[in-house]
Image (cartoon, rainbow, N blue to C red):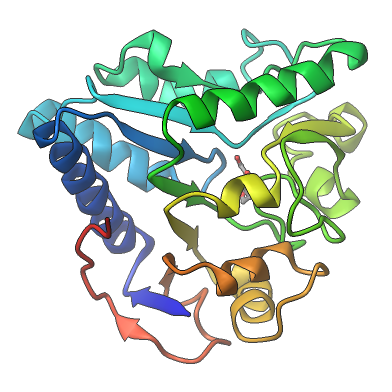
Length: 260
Ligand code: F6R
């Protein structure tokens, strides 16, 4: 497993931001779009802030970037400040020059009977875009990637899932109480995620140390869906020192070149 340990979440995020900038520029030089899979939550906040800074101060353009977000709460509308749609626009999309039509996110306000068609359509859009060049991930304390909770199959596709109670409790502060946290979400499946040509998972702080060790220091198991990344040919795990205390030391803060 390619595990990269950095002194801080900021330094790790800056390294990943530079990698993304190289990918965007490389794809532009080929006249192509860079297709990014994106995550929400606390883990990517430094990454998005750095990408915004690079856009403002270094002229990094998102004109040739196409994005697909991992997930969205079911029953939460786009305008709701707690929606992932709002989060992504606040943290990145409204602050850079990405064409709005290049942004794709699962739709939270959707009737049950429309969900299958929506999920098939989402997968089709990823295929039409040529597949995901680089998928950004966080990891939940349950071991989830996207919202693929323990038990999710390696080949699962974009679908409606039930959120684990630990995941709901971790979200309860944003929702002003557990009773307000949605029960379900639409998420890319593990199979969808693993089809990305490269993957970068971020985890910060001692609160993630146990799950990081379970995912990347142990066996591959559906009890910890993030462990499927061990079988991906180009998955890298970006950790700060506190998240890494229980896993074996990998290369320390190594800069990567853009793979493929
Ligand atoms: C978010 C997502 C989740 C989070 C994970 C970690 O789009 O898919 O898997 O990445 O729950 O969340 P944070 O970063 O808030 O600890």
